[in-house]
Image (cartoon, rainbow, N blue to C red; front, top):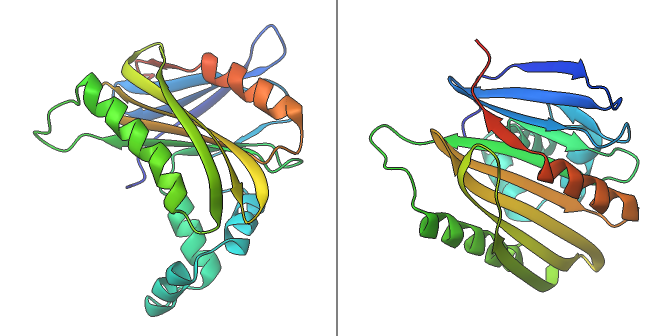
Length: 209
C-alpha cells in the first residue's frame, strides 16, 4: 500500500512511558503508548526485521525482485516500507506493523460485516504462507476508540517449525482501513502482555493542525 504522509510527535507522560502520535491522513491520527522501554517505535523498517524477512524470503519473491533489478534486501525494504510505522522489541524479535489504507475516491466506507470478513480472510491467509503450519485462529469484535468498526484475529502456528503467535486488528476509521499486525516470536512471555496493553490503549483522533 502506498506510504502516506505522517508526522510523529513524542512526549513524556506522567507514568514515565512515551506516548506516540502518528498523523495518517488529514484529519486522522493514531495515538498509543509504548508499554515499556523494551519497545521502540520507528518509521523505517528495523534492521533486525529486515534480517528476519530475508531469512524467510520466498523464492518467488526473490525471483520477482531480481527481474526488477532489485537485491533481496531492497525488495524486503520496499515490501515493509508500505507500512506507516513499526513497534518492535529488538531483544526478542517481536514486532507490530502499523498500516493505513485510505479509501479510494468515491469508495463507500465498509460496513461492519465487510470488516469482519476481511479479518477472517486475514486469519485464513496465514495458512497459505510458505513455512506456516498447525494454524489455529479465532476472530472477535473489539472496540477501538475513534474507529467505526474493528475485529481482532488471534492465531497460533508454527513457522518453519518454530512456534509463533499473531494478533491482528483490522478495522475502519474515518477515511480508510487500518491494520495493526503483531507477531510474537514467543521469546519472552512479557511481550504478549505488554503488546496487549498497547493495543488496548490505541485510539484514533483528529490530526494535529
